[in-house]
Image (tube, rainbow, N blue to C red; front, side):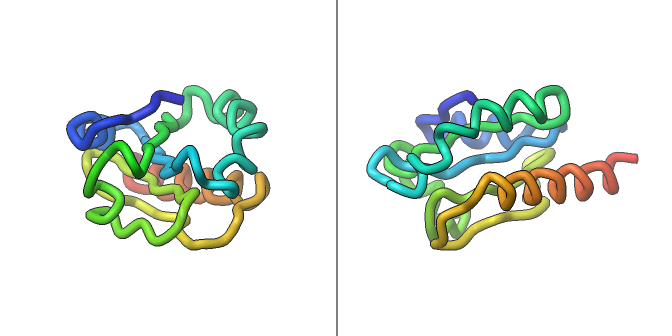
Length: 114
């Protein structure tokens, strides 16, 4: 998962015509650390169908505020600079919930790219 460390990198990443899912995280976040062990497996499972990027909320300045990220970890799917769907709340996220979100993001993406 590519780590995004500036607002410019973030903007370039979400402009892609591919499905890009931003994972908003921080080093100090215990719920973010909870998902770390299984995220590489998920990334591999969805390889070729979507791109996951990691957005450090402390490093990207106002991006998380501009994107209305209310808790971390949070997941937002983009294509061509547009937000498609989001999974944003203050609760810990399970692997199953994240997989369900990624599947939903793929369905939305495919419905507009037929």
